Length: 293
Ligand code: PAF
Image (cartoon, rainbow, N blue to C red; front, side, top):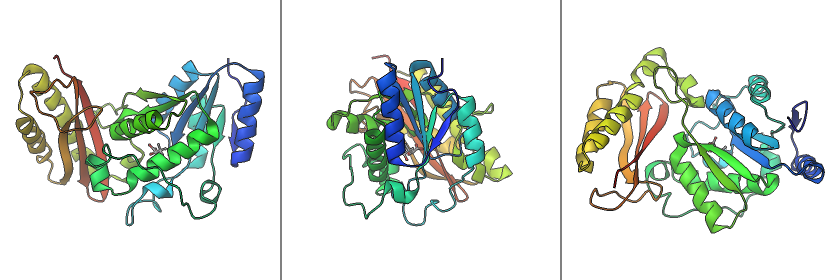
């Protein structure tokens, strides 16, 4: 049973707070939250459906957060389509859609930011300096505004999930983080709002990412004593079969600590994380593999 019959779109923090307070006063169901930057695809819809199945009230935020984009990145041209987003949100069961303006979220120069150390020094944290400070800051603001019981995040951004879990633990935020599986197109490409940037040829060649991850998984599971350098090299070689691919990183780390991984240690899960550019488009993908230790 939906808490609210017709989905509501809310632009101000005060209105959202009062709507959620009203829900909590009248109901004892939980509040589930799905933060996004919009241009919703089936991956976002799956997060909303999961939230719908577990929560009394489902809140979606759509906010392209300038703080997490570096100079020269795609903040200005990040794809936006509000009309379609609202259709997807409604069909997937959202109750409230929070769409603040930049000035609503950052009304004065921001002097307080949240930075999670350690976990952010590798992978996207190394390639995109300041990115995770922007993510941690906006997610912590959104958590304070929505005060959800559960928040749902996709594992395509596995480093983001690890960073947010650490922030929640360190700051004693009363929210459960629910990591959700990556959704893929039929041919294996991980769903991403940025896939729309790819030309037909880039889209075709981008399949090397999921293929490389499949190969890596097979390699790891069939060789319990595998060597990390050998694994990384296998993955790099496969990606290099796509002439347009330019590797930013292809790394194997312990998960969720994101510490360097040695196959002699008692790590139970590893992540093979990829960031690869096709033309101007930088795609990320990963596989998390449970080791039989
Ligand atoms: O994953 C995203 O879309 C963004 O990083 C998030 C979590 C909505 C914060 O802006």
